[in-house]
Image (cartoon, rainbow, N blue to C red; front, side, top):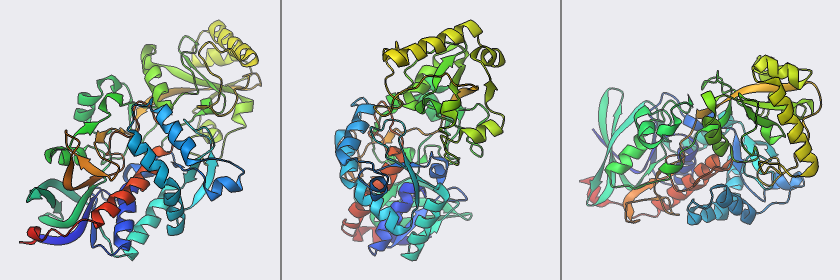
Length: 460
């Protein structure tokens, strides 16, 4: 059985839905194929942040920010291993995309400084609200969204990728895309074979991420000649309690509010202001991969109710954090040497006073905020692990979201956006840039596909 449309989008997360709204609103005949029973994918499991600068939301909070600052932060956090052209494209389109999302009905609840930000620019969404709003807008504009639709192969017609082979409802179909195919199927955090191949050092991580993130889109693109980028920089995400699951993603970043991180010897081993991807690397190098976040009541009071990263009180109520009136007592509860932990906290507090931290910490996160002493009882600790949540490596694309071959030539008819794409984050990760790039480049992919000439040859 065969169907003919203008654009086929593979995957119904943030990138795929933004692409579908953009394309359908422009009059294109669009279908979205999602292999899971429900839409949303990893976007529903995200930390809820989107990185935008110069927004009306920031201005209302008195925050001065710019696209230039955002671009420089992303390059710096990525250790300049990321593709500057992609980052500058993000910077050029980010404010327009923020305004577009607001216009479509996506609600932004707060704006905070999170990992890698010079200024507070982590605009928080409620993932369910954002995903369902974009779905509704896509359907209103005429896009058709199919779940339980598994794409098995892509096929070229006259050297252009134009056919999608899909299994849906016990039947196999061929869908012909006259203008373009956009891959937005997420990463491969749930593919043990791809993780073993590309990231064997991440064996001892909690496995999270969308259930459908098994690398399908990467395989489909590679079959058509795509190149991959950033696989050497695959990293886990630090901050999870070891009991975390997709349904209960128990995560805290007390260290970005002023907490410290220690190992089972009670010693600090990393500058806590770094990207939580780099913190994850450092934590995996500790004996038994055993680490703890440690903080005091002053930091506890900086928690944000309902926030995915900063709702400390809720995690405490779940019994996931330990509390004691002294550092010595806390050390005994969590099983680290009391004298060592006391010395660690004393040395850290002295470094806060002298601004001469042995590990180089001078801020709360990236270049934002000033550390404070851990001195106000009660004191808290949470055993913390690294999770494989999102892969942030994959298909090579250019600034037009066109998929590239090993010679940096675009593959006609094929586009990609979102987590499935590589080359964007480099060696680090700035919070909010994943959902941000999904929205921005999902729209770019749609706009580029719309401009393509109809493939009449595909209709025979």
